[in-house]
Image (cartoon, rainbow, N blue to C red; front, side):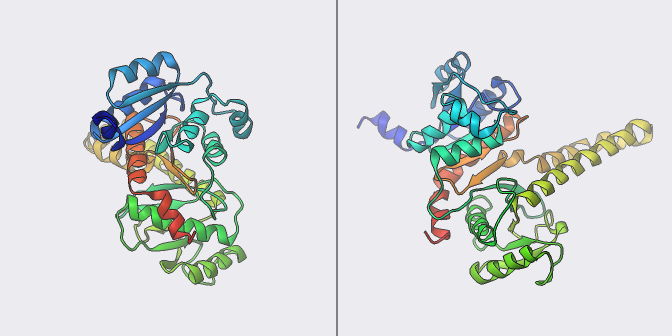
Amino acid sequence: MSAEDMKDATLTCVCVDAAGGDRPVSCVLEGVALALEADENLKVVLTGPSDEIVPFAEAHERCEARPTTQVIAMEEHPVQAVRSKSDSSIVVGCKLVREGVADGFFSAGSTGAVMTAAVLGIGRIKGIDRPALTAVLPGPKPTVFLDLGANADCKAENLVQFAQMGLAYARIVLDVDEPRVALLNNGSEETKGSMFAQECHARLKETVPQFAGNAEGNDLLAGAFDVIVTDGFTGNTVLKGLEGMSKFLMGTIMGAAKADPALAAAAGALKPVFGKAKDALSGDKYGGAILLGVKGVVAIGHGATSPQAVMNGTLCVAQAARAQLVDKIAQSCGR
């Protein structure tokens, strides 16, 4: 083995979908450049249009282009698109993870398509019934929150697995040795909630030593727990509610400032603070959501993702791969 090959063997390789998302390919490439600059032990493999990713790869060390000829649009049916577009940037990216060419995959493309390609192309961790979408919510202490919409209908056992996967992720991303996990419910008492919620509470209490009880809606951004679990229907609704609240508050404040000159000066002075609050709720710090439960590290960014979010998402995938997230999830689920 040559010295160059030995050096390459020490790099963490992340495949990035350059064609996914609502922004131009150039936006993704800008984020990749930032990630390569920030992490000297990172290698990036790009999937996407040849005319854009090949020149970029040639101009950047530790970057390789794998041109693809197809793109899965946001509005396409995920399963049909994944099965019919085998040379799309998303499908090829997941294939590279399955083949061991890449240690993980980041895409700002269709969430449904990425999840489908990951499950079909990479496969589930043995013993995991349903992978879950996961995000880190801001607060005095950040909180891992799942499922965000991968599973609208769940069984109690699914939430047990979500808790186990969330605990493994919290240890790696939040650097918490002994995470505390809670079940999202409409009250803190053990007897609160629907029959399903009560069944989940009983199973979590019985099988997850780190289970600390129920979390209410006002606990989501309070940092009271390290991991909060729920079904995908509720999680997706809650997440979009938080995003909508953020937009409403920002719009109301800026609208009032425009209408009153006295408030305009104050709003201008506080603009950096508003920006930080908006960024915290956007998820850009962690690059989006990570799909836990598949045999590879897969992260999904927002469609309108920024270069900063692409950078953070790419670095987050590399961090999780180095920390052997997949193996730790398998161990935490007793497989």
